[in-house]
Amino acid sequence: MKVKFNTQNLNKNPKAAFEIFAQKIKGSIKKKDNIDVQAFSNELHTIGDVFEKQNNKEHMTKVSRNFAQQLVSLKENNLAGIIYSFLIKFNAGNDKLVKELATNALAIAKRFNDPVHIMSRSRNLADIYHKTEPGSQNHLKMLYEEKRAIRDVIKSYDKLGNRYKTIKTGLKPIENYEQMLSIVLVSIAKIIKSTNPKQAIEELTLAQSIMSKYEKGNLSYQIERLLKELTKNNK
Image (cartoon, rainbow, N blue to C red):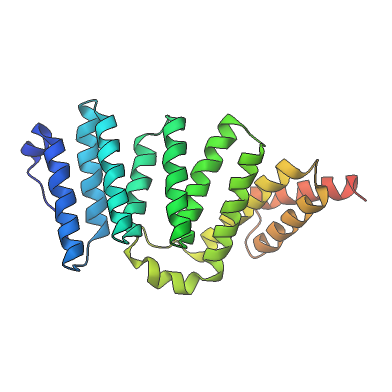
């Protein structure tokens, strides 16, 4: 479904424009129309741009969060996930708010057994903890959460391809997820290599096995170097 706005009216009253947008989407859901998620995302960003230019990001964040919760209650988790992805980027730099948004979105994704959004929100939180408390238990917990989600995506890739046709960007090629998994495994190994070298070696060995299918690059050499270091020090 393509939702259109009068640009002049949007600039004059973005609050009303958002309300119209939300009502049209909810009406389409009620009628069981197919919603064009790219159009949905585009309109969300267009309205957000106006709020940002008017220095009113706080209101856009508030109404978008409320709308996302309504969509969750309507079992439209994919659309809610798009809103949370937008809000996390929209509020980039505000670590406290992004952490709150990502935590809420992660809980929703888990409720719906949604590995793609679990993966994305775990990544958001891991990035925040990497900045605010690198190597902490919180940081490590989110990396393990991301690891499990990526493995779930890889394991069920063909089935998820049908499930996520409605996601704005769709699924990436499976090779992307395999390499993402390897990066996460290396991040985990770096944190635990002193406290749990055996587990760190297992994480790196798995990463090496995955990357053996691809042409060697910086990541492969990094894995080899870390494995060599750990096996040497833990014979």
